[in-house]
Length: 77
Image (cartoon, rainbow, N blue to C red):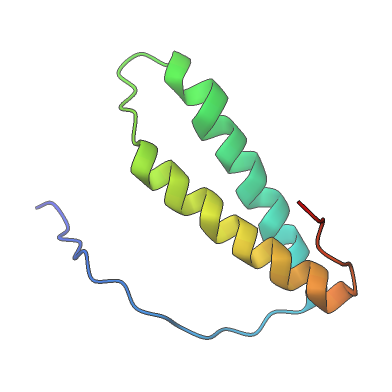
């Protein structure tokens, strides 16, 4: 039986230490690199640009929060 995933997305609150959050950001960035550059070269790969865009946005939000907590100012555009 295939699990059923619903498209409903809500917000949750979770507490992490700065070190834990940094580790998650590093892992997420590594995974995004793999999805963007390595996976497309694999046979049978299915491109999911919407999922990649949402994932990048989520990592950017977490990175911004982490940098703010560390006292690092955001780059000016």
